[in-house]
Image (cartoon, rainbow, N blue to C red; front, side, top):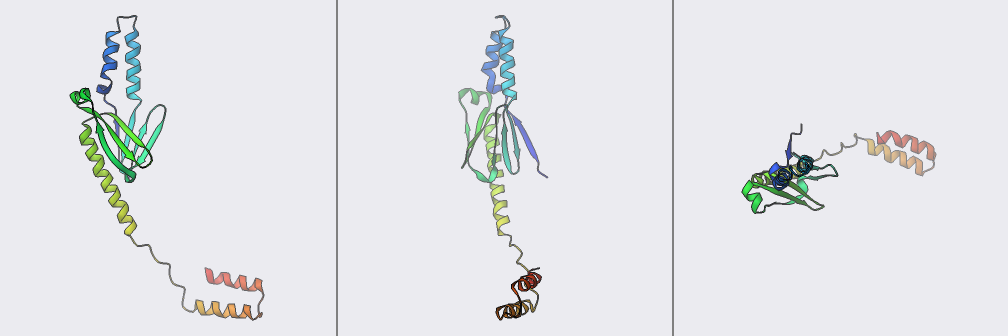
Length: 172
Protein backbone atom coordinates (compact mmCIF):
# COMPACT_ATOMS: atom_id res chain seq x y z
CA UNK A 1 0.00 0.00 0.00
CA UNK A 2 1.38 3.38 -0.97
CA UNK A 3 0.53 6.29 1.30
CA UNK A 4 0.44 9.70 -0.29
CA UNK A 5 0.32 13.29 0.87
CA UNK A 6 -1.40 15.91 -1.22
CA UNK A 7 -0.02 19.44 -1.00
CA UNK A 8 -1.41 22.68 -2.41
CA UNK A 9 0.22 26.07 -2.72
CA UNK A 10 -0.61 28.49 0.09
CA UNK A 11 -2.77 31.52 -0.68
CA UNK A 12 0.01 33.60 0.84
CA UNK A 13 2.14 33.07 -2.26
CA UNK A 14 -0.43 35.04 -4.27
CA UNK A 15 -1.08 37.64 -1.58
CA UNK A 16 -0.27 40.57 -3.87
CA UNK A 17 -2.64 39.29 -6.55
CA UNK A 18 -5.45 39.08 -4.01
CA UNK A 19 -4.56 42.53 -2.63
CA UNK A 20 -4.66 44.13 -6.09
CA UNK A 21 -7.97 42.41 -6.77
CA UNK A 22 -9.50 43.81 -3.59
CA UNK A 23 -8.23 47.29 -4.41
CA UNK A 24 -9.71 47.12 -7.93
CA UNK A 25 -13.21 45.96 -6.90
CA UNK A 26 -14.59 49.53 -7.09
CA UNK A 27 -13.30 49.80 -10.68
CA UNK A 28 -16.28 48.22 -12.52
CA UNK A 29 -15.86 44.89 -10.71
CA UNK A 30 -12.48 44.25 -12.33
CA UNK A 31 -11.19 43.23 -8.90
CA UNK A 32 -13.61 40.27 -8.75
CA UNK A 33 -12.21 38.94 -12.02
CA UNK A 34 -8.62 39.32 -10.75
CA UNK A 35 -9.45 37.59 -7.47
CA UNK A 36 -11.16 34.74 -9.35
CA UNK A 37 -8.16 34.40 -11.68
CA UNK A 38 -5.62 34.39 -8.83
CA UNK A 39 -7.71 31.84 -6.89
CA UNK A 40 -7.92 29.49 -9.90
CA UNK A 41 -4.19 29.80 -10.49
CA UNK A 42 -3.46 29.00 -6.85
CA UNK A 43 -5.81 25.99 -6.80
CA UNK A 44 -4.46 24.60 -10.08
CA UNK A 45 -1.23 23.42 -8.42
CA UNK A 46 -1.44 20.01 -6.76
CA UNK A 47 1.55 18.09 -5.49
CA UNK A 48 1.37 14.43 -4.52
CA UNK A 49 4.18 12.97 -2.44
CA UNK A 50 4.36 9.19 -2.03
CA UNK A 51 7.04 6.98 -0.54
CA UNK A 52 8.47 6.47 -4.05
CA UNK A 53 7.72 9.58 -6.12
CA UNK A 54 6.76 13.25 -6.15
CA UNK A 55 4.21 14.31 -8.73
CA UNK A 56 3.32 17.87 -9.76
CA UNK A 57 -0.02 18.51 -11.45
CA UNK A 58 -0.96 21.80 -13.04
CA UNK A 59 -3.81 22.51 -15.42
CA UNK A 60 -1.28 22.63 -18.28
CA UNK A 61 1.23 19.89 -17.43
CA UNK A 62 2.11 16.96 -15.23
CA UNK A 63 5.59 16.16 -14.00
CA UNK A 64 7.00 13.57 -11.64
CA UNK A 65 10.32 12.44 -10.24
CA UNK A 66 11.28 9.24 -8.43
CA UNK A 67 12.70 9.81 -4.96
CA UNK A 68 15.71 7.62 -5.75
CA UNK A 69 16.68 9.97 -8.62
CA UNK A 70 16.64 13.20 -6.59
CA UNK A 71 20.07 14.83 -6.42
CA UNK A 72 19.34 18.13 -4.66
CA UNK A 73 16.62 19.77 -2.57
CA UNK A 74 16.68 23.50 -1.87
CA UNK A 75 14.35 26.23 -0.64
CA UNK A 76 13.83 29.59 -2.33
CA UNK A 77 12.35 32.46 -0.34
CA UNK A 78 12.26 36.19 -0.89
CA UNK A 79 11.71 38.76 1.86
CA UNK A 80 7.91 38.61 1.64
CA UNK A 81 7.91 34.82 1.62
CA UNK A 82 10.01 34.78 4.79
CA UNK A 83 7.60 37.25 6.37
CA UNK A 84 4.64 34.98 5.57
CA UNK A 85 6.50 31.77 6.49
CA UNK A 86 6.27 30.26 3.02
CA UNK A 87 8.71 29.33 0.28
CA UNK A 88 9.26 27.27 -2.84
CA UNK A 89 10.86 23.84 -2.43
CA UNK A 90 13.00 23.08 -5.48
CA UNK A 91 13.65 19.41 -6.18
CA UNK A 92 16.33 18.58 -8.74
CA UNK A 93 17.03 15.23 -10.37
CA UNK A 94 19.30 14.21 -13.23
CA UNK A 95 16.50 14.79 -15.76
CA UNK A 96 14.51 17.78 -14.57
CA UNK A 97 13.41 20.05 -11.77
CA UNK A 98 10.14 20.35 -9.86
CA UNK A 99 9.13 23.40 -7.83
CA UNK A 100 6.66 23.00 -5.02
CA UNK A 101 5.34 26.57 -5.01
CA UNK A 102 4.14 28.43 -1.91
CA UNK A 103 4.65 25.74 0.72
CA UNK A 104 4.26 26.64 4.37
CA UNK A 105 7.26 25.70 6.53
CA UNK A 106 9.39 24.93 3.45
CA UNK A 107 12.56 24.04 5.41
CA UNK A 108 10.70 21.37 7.35
CA UNK A 109 9.13 19.98 4.16
CA UNK A 110 12.54 19.91 2.43
CA UNK A 111 14.05 18.04 5.36
CA UNK A 112 11.20 15.51 5.34
CA UNK A 113 11.74 14.91 1.62
CA UNK A 114 15.50 14.49 2.22
CA UNK A 115 14.77 11.75 4.78
CA UNK A 116 12.38 10.06 2.34
CA UNK A 117 15.02 10.18 -0.41
CA UNK A 118 17.62 8.58 1.89
CA UNK A 119 15.16 5.86 2.92
CA UNK A 120 14.25 5.10 -0.71
CA UNK A 121 17.92 4.90 -1.75
CA UNK A 122 18.65 2.52 1.17
CA UNK A 123 15.66 0.38 0.21
CA UNK A 124 16.90 0.20 -3.39
CA UNK A 125 20.40 -0.80 -2.24
CA UNK A 126 19.01 -3.52 0.01
CA UNK A 127 16.85 -4.93 -2.76
CA UNK A 128 19.95 -5.20 -4.97
CA UNK A 129 21.76 -7.13 -2.23
CA UNK A 130 19.10 -9.83 -1.98
CA UNK A 131 20.56 -12.80 -3.82
CA UNK A 132 18.56 -14.18 -6.68
CA UNK A 133 17.64 -17.84 -6.53
CA UNK A 134 20.00 -19.93 -8.61
CA UNK A 135 18.53 -22.09 -11.34
CA UNK A 136 17.93 -25.59 -10.11
CA UNK A 137 20.56 -27.99 -11.39
CA UNK A 138 19.62 -30.46 -14.05
CA UNK A 139 18.32 -33.77 -12.69
CA UNK A 140 20.99 -36.42 -12.22
CA UNK A 141 21.91 -38.19 -15.41
CA UNK A 142 20.41 -35.55 -17.70
CA UNK A 143 23.77 -34.44 -19.08
CA UNK A 144 24.80 -38.04 -19.67
CA UNK A 145 21.59 -38.72 -21.60
CA UNK A 146 22.09 -35.52 -23.64
CA UNK A 147 25.67 -36.57 -24.44
CA UNK A 148 24.42 -40.00 -25.55
CA UNK A 149 21.73 -38.38 -27.76
CA UNK A 150 24.28 -36.01 -29.29
CA UNK A 151 26.60 -38.94 -30.01
CA UNK A 152 23.83 -40.81 -31.83
CA UNK A 153 23.05 -37.73 -33.91
CA UNK A 154 26.72 -37.08 -34.75
CA UNK A 155 27.15 -40.68 -35.89
CA UNK A 156 24.13 -40.30 -38.16
CA UNK A 157 22.13 -42.95 -36.35
CA UNK A 158 19.21 -40.51 -35.80
CA UNK A 159 17.91 -37.75 -38.08
CA UNK A 160 18.08 -33.99 -37.37
CA UNK A 161 14.33 -33.89 -36.78
CA UNK A 162 14.47 -36.76 -34.29
CA UNK A 163 17.43 -35.13 -32.52
CA UNK A 164 15.57 -31.77 -32.17
CA UNK A 165 12.43 -33.57 -30.97
CA UNK A 166 14.29 -35.58 -28.31
CA UNK A 167 16.36 -32.53 -27.29
CA UNK A 168 13.15 -30.71 -26.29
CA UNK A 169 12.55 -33.27 -23.55
CA UNK A 170 15.80 -32.32 -21.84
CA UNK A 171 15.09 -28.56 -21.81
CA UNK A 172 11.91 -28.85 -19.70
